[in-house]
Image 1 (tube, rainbow, N blue to C red):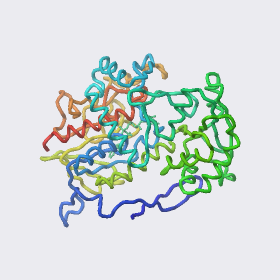
Image 2: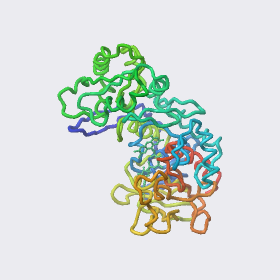
Image 3: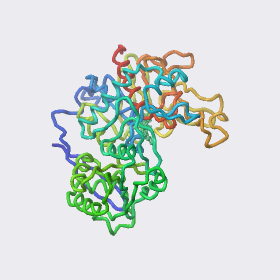
Image 4: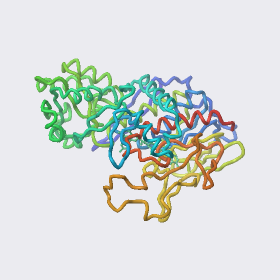
Length: 464
Ligand SMILES: Cc1cc2nc3c(=O)[nH]c(=O)nc-3n(C[C@H](O)[C@H](O)[C@H](O)COP(=O)(O)OP(=O)(O)OC[C@H]3O[C@@H](n4cnc5c(N)ncnc54)[C@H](O)[C@@H]3O)c2cc1C
C-alpha cells in the first residue's frame, strides 16, 4: 500500500493520510523511460498529453487503455469547478436557447447548422464509444454515473433552476426522478453552510412542485463553526461513521410524507455512493445530492479519482507542472516542463494539446489578438478586438470570444493559417477547439471526452 498525503485548508488546516491500493509493482514510470543515467532529466514517451482538465484526463485514460506510454502535464483544470453533470449536447441554436431531450438529434441538428463545430468532425459511434469508455472507467473506479442512453435528463441546480444534461453521478439520480414525478420531497440545508439554500430552491420551483418542502439542520460535529463549507462536510462524512449516523438522525424526524430527500453535494469525496446508500437505509427514503456553487465536491471527486487512477494505469502524471516551451524536432517534440521554471524535459513522439481556453490558460488574450500559449498555433478569432464581445453583455447569442480556438482537420490536428496541419503529430482536444461555446450549448464534458477519444485514435494511426 502506498500513501498519499493531502493537505487542505478551510478556516483551519487538517492533515491526514489517505491510503490507496496503488501496487508498487505497477510503477507509474513503466512504459516511460529516462534517457540514461547521465541524463535523468529527459523522459521519453510515445505520447505527451498537455492538460489535466476533462479533455486531458480523458485523452490520457484512452491512450493508457490502448497501451501507449503517456506523460501528462498540467494544473487542475475546469474539472474542479464542474457540477458533476456530464453534458453531451443540450442547447441549440444558442440564440433560441432551444433545449433538446434527445442529445443525438441535437448533435445532428448542430452539425447540419454549424459544420465547423468539433462534433461535426466526429462520427456518432465515436462519441458514444468515448463516453461509454469514460463512464465504465468511472464505474470501475467507484464513482458510478447514471443516464438514459438516448435521452437527456433535467437536473436541479443549486439555485432551483433546471438544466438539460446527459449523465449524473448516481448520488444525484433520485433527484432526476423526484423532479420528473413532482413527488413529495424534502430539501435539507445546513446552518452556516455557504452557497446552498433549500428555501431558494423551493422559491424557484415551488409553484410547479407543490410537494417540495424544506428544512435546515445543524451538521453534526461542526455546530460551533461560524462558516461551513461543502468540502469540509464531505471529508467528515468520508472518515466518520458517527457523523453519518448523526446526520441521518438529524434528518429523519423531518422526512414525514416525503418520498425523497435532497441535500447539497456533501456525501463524501471518496465514498459518495456508499455514503448515499447507508444514509438511505437509515433515513428510509431515496436520497439525492444537488450541486452547490462551484468549486464543489462533485468536481473534487472527479479530480481525485482521475489523479489517483492515472498513475495506476501507468500514466506518468505531473499534476502541478506547466509546459513552458515546446520544440518540434525530427521524430517528435521536446517539452520543457516544471513548476515555476523548466526543470525537466519530455521527449514525445506525439502530443495531444488539451490546454483549455482562457481559464485553463491554453489561450492568452493580448491587446490585439488571442494567442495559443505553447506552440503559437493559428487561432480562429474575430479580425480585431472590437469583435470579441457583443455590445449587450447578456446577448442571447453569446460573445464571439466564446467560440475562438483551434481549427482542426478530421484527425484533430490543429491547422495553420494556410489550412494544413501545423504539425503531423500534434493533436488537440477539448475546449481549446474553435466554433463551439460549450457553456451555452451544454456540451462541456461530452465534447472534451469525445474529442479526446478521436484525438487518441487518430494519434494511434499516425506513424511518428
Ligand atoms: C464553472 C464550470 C462549470 C462546469 N460545469 C459543467 C457541467 O455542468 N457539465 C459539463 O459537462 N461540464 C462542465 N464544465 C466543463 C468541464 O469541466 C471542462 O471544463 C470543459 O469540458 C473543458 O475542459 P478542458 O479539459 O478542455 O479544459 P480545462 O478544464 O480548462 O483544462 C485545461 C488544462 O490545461 C492545462 N494547461 C494549460 N496550459 C498549460 C501549459 N502550458 N502546460 C501544462 N498544462 C497546461 C491546465 O492546467 C488544465 O489542466 C464546467 C466547467 C466550469 C469551469
